[in-house]
Length: 102
Image (tube, rainbow, N blue to C red; front, side, top):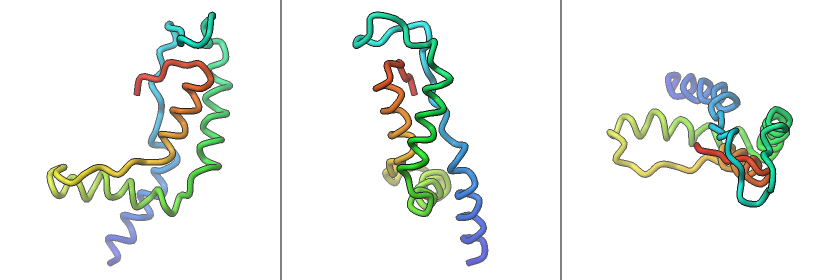
């Protein structure tokens, strides 16, 4: 039980620094006439803040633990749980006109 608690706390710490989007700054999105890369730092900060506001850490932590530890124990045969934070972050960056690769 203690190991599970430590694992959950470790996952809780990792939830805030796990996702970093990979963005193609040379390309353009189809919805804009010009490149949106000039605002990338501002957009990254705004989208990260927005994603943190709209996710619950107590709900996200067990998903991280499941995806990275439980699935590994079962040789990745179990289905992966979708994480809310990266999906909100990615959607925000795409809506701001950036081409998000991952």
